[in-house]
Image (cartoon, rainbow, N blue to C red; front, side, top):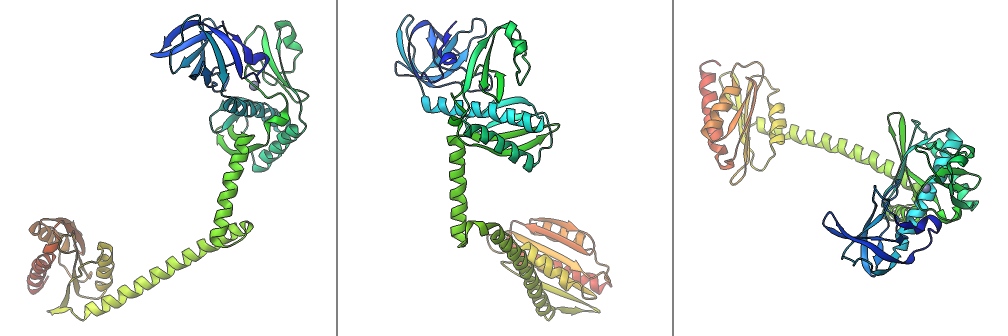
Length: 406
Ligand SMILES: [Zn+2]
């Protein structure tokens, strides 16, 4: 069993020790020491990193059967070797701030809302707690956050100690114990007492600002994500820069951003409506012009037109407008050399031609596919250069049909 130096002094980053077991874990070199300041993954807190004789410690795990701390290394160390250890202090202190902040915030949720923390997760970029209450309003979260920050400013001592079985009933632990035996308690004096094996700062002032950044309802629970210390400051910096740059881009004060964004959204909506109106007017004018080229055929008229470079959508809208005239057949094509070709055939409802069938035949003739209803059909082909030919076939067939009285 490794003596865990962080229990007594979480601020000790450097230490001397001996390798008592040199081993490989999942193919990676590892070492067990007689004493260590490295915290292993557990209790919701990630492991420390650092160095043993300059060799990087990439992971630390507590071995279940004997409680030994196994340091996973980038290179092996020899059995019995003396080592100088160093914990990556920046990472450790950040984790201590987040972890202590969690104790303060969880207690604030209990005191203000009677909401208990049922799960805790300390990640590399945020910390989350799951509360046994839902939903929580923005107002409630904001009051709890303010309460937690008051405890930070009060700079209350954070004290850890080992407590025997007999003493446990006299403690007012925030969470009941899951097991028996001696327990390590961490007390934010006058605010919170919890059983915890993690690393914490010595006084609440060192936690720095506590900021809730997100909350999400999960059934009967709420997950709350928050940042402490430098993480909160980095988040503020990033958001401040974002807001400042946006305001500069729009040439307004940052407080005018919501109004500016709403105004732009309204303008965009109005512009889109106007573009649609102009587009429709343009298509109406184009349809009128095409109508002059209609070929009279008995009591009906046929509009045949090849519109290279236009989108399938455009010719669909045009065809619809043209076919709203009585006794009219419309045959339109778009596409060209080296492009896909598209075809739209439409007729007024007072004629009897089956344009879906015609479309199928025409598309087959030009190596494409298509079909549709009697009064509305569309098709396409990879051979855009054959659109003239396709229209000629269709026109011929429509002419014959109309002659027969279709
Ligand atoms: Zn803790």
